Length: 280
Ligand SMILES: CC(C)(COP(=O)(O)OP(=O)(O)OC[C@H]1O[C@@H](n2cnc3c(N)ncnc32)[C@H](O)[C@@H]1OP(=O)(O)O)[C@@H](O)C(=O)NCCC(=O)NCCS
Image 1 (tube, rainbow, N blue to C red):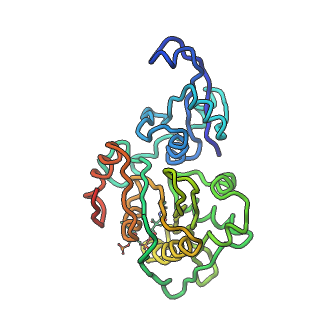
Image 2 (spheres, rainbow, N blue to C red; image 1 turned 135 degrees about the horizontal axis):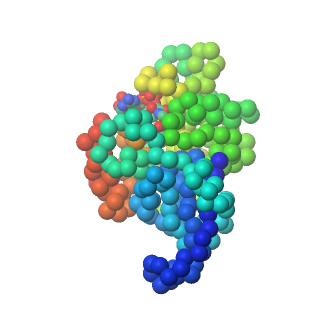
Image 3 (cartoon, protein in one colour; image 1 turned 90 degrees about the horizontal axis):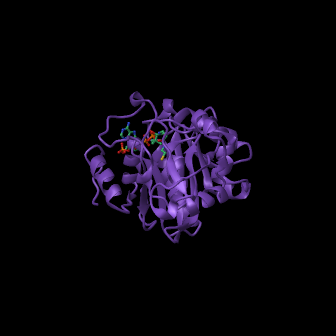
């Protein structure tokens, strides 16, 4: 699963500095969220996402080179059309006015004090990663996540291969048949907006167990773990389509990160649809 880019040469179109430069379309074969996150890492704004039937960014110049340096795979334009992820079907989304319905947003918790405490309901236990759990993680995400294509490569791209890190950071909730039914990770980013942050990453509960209060103890454990590991603050990224998740994060004291007018209008649109209020 990958970020893909094709290549063509711009003639004399657009601002002069882009004339006769190598350009390309940047897409993901996994998810729009992943694409927006990758593009942000290149210094592109989330709202520059092109909204046609194939969501993509037009990249040129130094952004093009950086995309390749950061692992975008150079493919033909035909390959882009064949493999690029498309917008999810309208009936897979909750009713929203935000167009398109699937924008990446970020939330922050600028301290890790007063983390809400939720215990696991009877019959469920929390435990941390053990060798072999990569497969369990994939099964949970594949069942719960309707927007990303889940694979072993995605797991490795997100978490690397250092099992020691996973053992202290990746949490599972287990039912009374010893089946892992949910997961969340106390991850980190050494340079988010120029500062080190803990990161609440890849939270999911399998659909048949959702709505029973299982995500709350997971999030309690993960936020506490971040603090134990020395993080002072945390962030997460999610999407406007994930209303239950945003409610969960608001409940845990995460607040919208507003980096510009477009974030502001996205959060204003969301405001009336969420269970908990927030100030922006
Ligand atoms: C988001 C998710 C993890 C919540 O798991 P869950 O076990 O159902 O959540 P809980 O029962 O512990 O509820 C936690 C909070 O989430 C919110 N929530 C849960 N289900 C909701 C729903 N259907 N509608 C609105 N809010 C909801 C509520 O705020 C709830 O707490 P509250 O009722 O006390 O306010 C789950 O829906 C899921 O796995 N979704 C698909 C994957 C995903 O989107 N992950 C997030 C990626 S950023």
